[in-house]
Image (cartoon, each protein chain N blue to C red):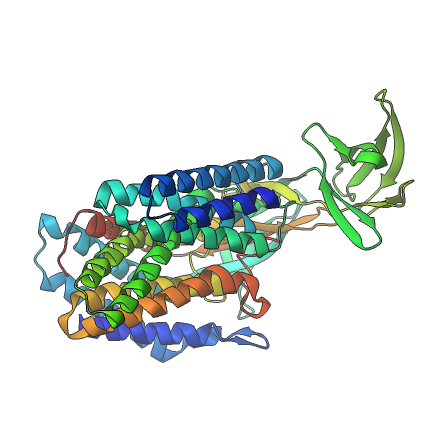
Length: 255
Length: 291
């Protein structure tokens, strides 16, 4: 399966590199996503459960999320010029999946056998994928503003906001569905001792600050800082908490 | 809104301080300090002011619902913080052992108002996984859906498992020939291993739980009884109390760990959660561009 993932990664990169030919790039993106989905289905069959239980599985699913999310944004917001950011984000997710330790023998423990499991994880994956693209777009916008003071940069900033506006309700659902789920398992909808939960709340609150800064004239100049901090918190929540033992969460580790 | 943003930012700083890893874990004590609680109260006040500042109109329903939801979560959480009773205790598999009181933290006991007994308990496990070892390599393999473990030149194996209450689980591993005959290879309890002819060592790994469930019997003062089944993700409600199945005795299956909880703030928090979810979705997906 590693070889197939590498093929998917290469196709995503080719899609990004062939952006001048829109149709070719789109076909390559679609092909890469199909291969990615095949890996997800194979993982599902092999372990016998929905493949969301460890970071490797989640990164593979994340890679496949970017194409449908892009298609929704194209249809709903008419922003097909955003194409370049999605394949590169998908490639990044697959690259991380390849370097992570695999746990092929993951079993779904009793705590994960809940109706909230799939909605909670999927909403987070989709919202974090959108937030990643929004951040990449913001970085590109900031670089463009430095090179040439282009009003196109304002348009891109507006699109970055629209991506986050689409992502935030999903992030809210992910956070709160986790609370409802915890209530049904452990009898506690929140645990400050769980670093994953606290970091996800930090991430959510920082994005909330971003939206409020954007709407408040006196605080508008801080919105970019809030966005950067929110994305750094997102990376910590999604990756560092799972990978670093000192930050690791007891309730979100099912080993 | 400036005040609200400042409060949120201060809360983020507190949360960051609270997740700093120290030798015994994180600094979670910071979330019980008066300063943190005051910040939450100020946030609640800020939310209340936001609700009254804007007239309730249909186009702003998402705004009001999300702020109201957040406010209800804070109010419900505050009530839970002050009034919640939560106790974890072992419940033994013995129909004669009736629990009527819960041991509290201050060495006192709380009368449940009824008797609680563990009538039955059951655990199911996934088919076992194996580790295949050779010098310099470790390969973990799983038994196939057909119940056969096929590891190429080393052979084909079938595993059967036996659970008996009060006894450790037992496994039998059979070597399956090409004519489908079974020869017992290894028999016994957990973590057995067997050296194969081509130098590999086949080791049985610790089994993983699939699900566990318990049947609780509630006995009222008039000796009438009610039985309810409880499992992970399916707590049981009875007379204002909620019971959760947390874990069990892994060796002899002689007891389960149960958490009993009575929380007057819970329903307010749940309503607040749904209001916040729906309110945020309405605010961002309905095209409401107001502040």
